[in-house]
Amino acid sequence: MQIFGVDIGGSGIKGAPVDLDRGDLADERFKVLTPHPATPDSVADGVRQVVEHFGWTGPVGLTFPGVVTGGATIRTAANVDKSWIDTDARALFSERLGGLPVTVVNDADAAGVAEMSFGAGRDRRGTVVLLTFGTGIGSALFVDGVLVPNTELGHLELHGHDAEKRASSKAKEDEELTWEYWAHHRVQKYLAHVEMLFSPELFIIGGGVSRKSQKFLHHIEDIKAEIVPAQLLNNAGIVGAAMQAAKES
Image (cartoon, rainbow, N blue to C red; front, side):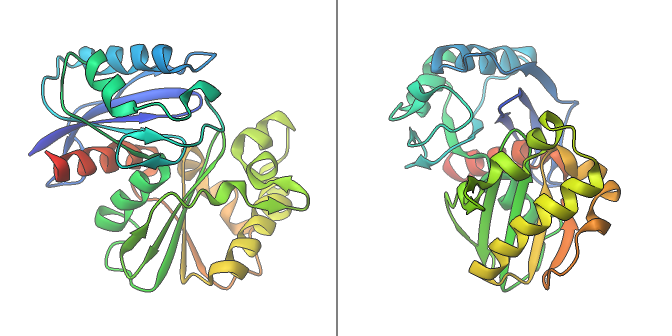
């Protein structure tokens, strides 16, 4: 069975048909740059480009980088335009896609669902936290495989700052930090704070940095939980979005 998944991020909008039996992309993903400002209309146009690239005509699952309630309504918009707040994203995207059935889910929650089903969290019990490091920091919290939605742990306060302003991969790039410094002085302190609050057995590190895990994970010390890279790498959001759409179609 195939369902289309789209992952909307602060820097790119990417999507592809997903083979839900394998938990992997059924075709090479297609990506367009996230427009700036990332308003509802401009992002919806980008999503349409991605979906039309494949000539897709079935259900579509989409991720969004913020809190999503009821599979439709946007409640926060940290890394996109503030005009997203209170937007009915399901209605917007469905209209822009010619009436196709649409499901919208928090981006990190989607990635987490995919990793728990097909990746690094498969068959893991206890408390598992997936964190995506990109333009911001997304989070997905699971207890015995059950998702606690919309946790948004990237916005925890860390040393007087929004955590993602200090520890995201964008912060690393903007401040030109080395992998070692970023991992040891930023990511490690952030993980220690999350560990103090939730005592997870496992951290899964996702987002764009997951494919470069060999450059930084070994610099993270003094964390009791196991730390592993996401196995689906940066495709987890696409897969998870498609999984969510399949549940509702």
